[in-house]
Image (tube, rainbow, N blue to C red):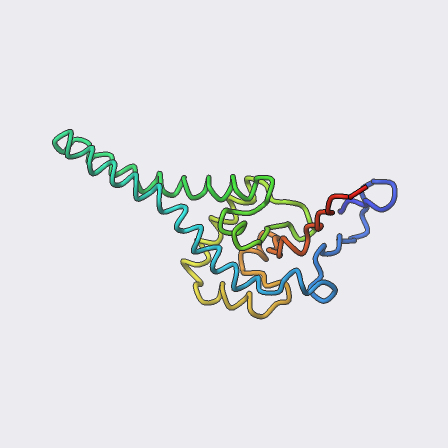
Length: 180
């Protein structure tokens, strides 16, 4: 069953599927350079995620010295806190108004659903978890999938129904100030 937005707004039962919002053949500029920029966006995001984690480990180490070793018991919390921080980071960034992490914003990328809707918190968090799971088990395959499709989607993008596009191409160019 799918939603028919063209006619009366009623649900239809004919098996019709909404078309992809971003066609790589009609709009190749949306996907030009996306694969390379995703790699750099990922590296930037790893720095953004790592800095608070490293600071947390340093704090626990110093706290352990001050408390004569008792504070080092907090090290068992560091790994779960790091995972939660990464999931919250991706969920909040992709669920935010720009639908992109900090690295994606710097590289001028944006995550959208296959039908064109912006990202939301659960999608961003799931995107991160599924990426790490697929990379852990199928490392080269995850990246190779992106080289053989027009939208440059990776394996977890196919599973979640997302696509990463060039934001500057999609966003309208602001008009200059009028002189009259």
